[in-house]
Amino acid sequence: MQSREYAKLTHTFPLAATRREPAGPVRTIAVTGGKGGVGKTNVSANLAVALAGMGKRTLLLDADLGLANIDVVLGLQPKHTLADLVAGRCTLEEVIIEGPNGVLVVPAASGRRHMAELAPAEHVGLVNAFSELERDLDVMIIDTAAGITDSVLTFCQAAQDTVVVVCDEPASITDAYALIKVLSRERGVDRIQVVANMARDPNEGRALYEKLVRVCEKFLIDVSLNYLGCVPQDDWLRVSVQRQQPVVKLYPSAPAALAIQEIARRTARWQAPTTPRGGVEFFLERIIQQKVSA
Ligand SMILES: Nc1ncnc2c1ncn2[C@@H]1O[C@H](COP(=O)(O)OP(=O)(O)OP(=O)(O)O)[C@@H](O)[C@H]1O
Ligand SMILES: [Mg+2]
Image 1 (cartoon, rainbow, N blue to C red):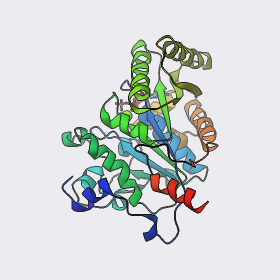
Image 2: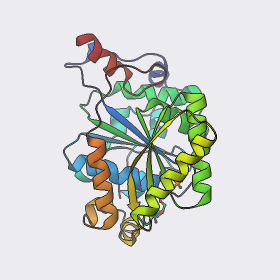
Image 3: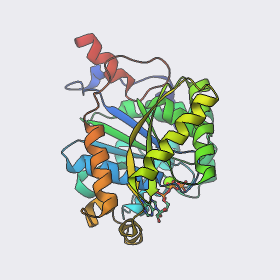
């Protein structure tokens, strides 16, 4: 965080006054899950590519700062990553690369330990750095790391919606519950969308969701859960991972691809924010700008 330009971004926003036309508000959706390996990255990447394919101007942020792999899943070779932005070697605009269906991708670096150990203020700085972008965007998908670290909590808090991916393993339910509890109690998140991944049939997906609802009710977590859908266990998705292409593009009629396209249609109907929620928030000044000019 040595860069003067970056340091400036942690404290101030380059305001819309410097823009030709103020860009509109952006729907921001964080994808998380608590447990590792439940499918966060594949859900994020395919959801973003599906939304881009529907004509939504979509930005996909790899917020797994220490073990980033969105670029690998999408077969991209980034020139710059968030590590270069943090070191002051480039601007956020220069980090962006284009992926399948024209999705815009902000890749992170893998194996840079200092990126996994940024201070809380630096996570807020990264969120605020998005104010620098002048692009017109409809939606941003944020792929988070596993766990309940400050980075995961801050990126979820800064997004309008948090999608929690769960699968049929006891540790997935307990980790998802732990994450939801901390998000609710420490970060004021009061609404969670649930995706059941690797389900053997639709009933299993719904049953997993209901299990999570029961745990949250039992321990009096003040949060409303909504079932966004289920993604089946699908070997075509595994083949796509091997071939470094998103399943929605490589095998669009595979069961997992159809399920993610349906989830994309649902999320595409969500409205962009109209009022700031208070606290750290992606593209905050665009929401304020919209309110001022309304
Ligand atoms: N619906 C699915 N059907 C079959 N395999 C799947 C499915 N979803 C995920 N997988 C498998 O699980 C692996 C892990 O998925 P992914 O990398 O998306 O998980 P993650 O939650 O992002 O992991 P991490 O916590 O390490 O970031 C994939 O490489 C793929 O092989
Ligand atoms: Mg991942």
